[in-house]
Image 1: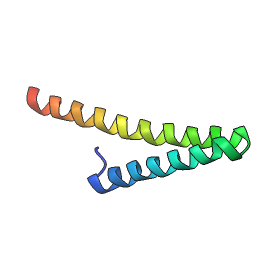
Image 2: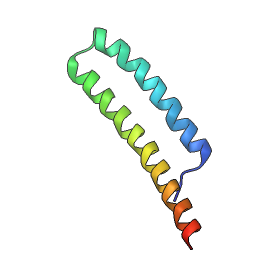
Image 3: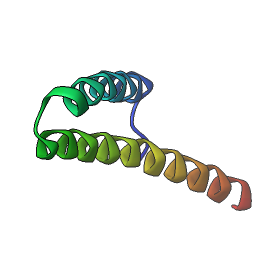
Image 4: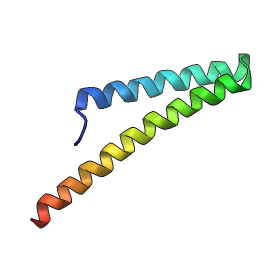
Length: 65
């Protein structure tokens, strides 16, 4: 099931904010802080990509039925 456009947009905005935080953390924080921020970015990006994959699979499934 695909997430709504509003949720997807909010996740993308969160990724943008986390990238900004990562840039600051890379210069001023301990490395483990930057690592965990990067992990969260990857988790959210993966969520968006899986959502897109599911959407494409659902479209393909409806075309072949």
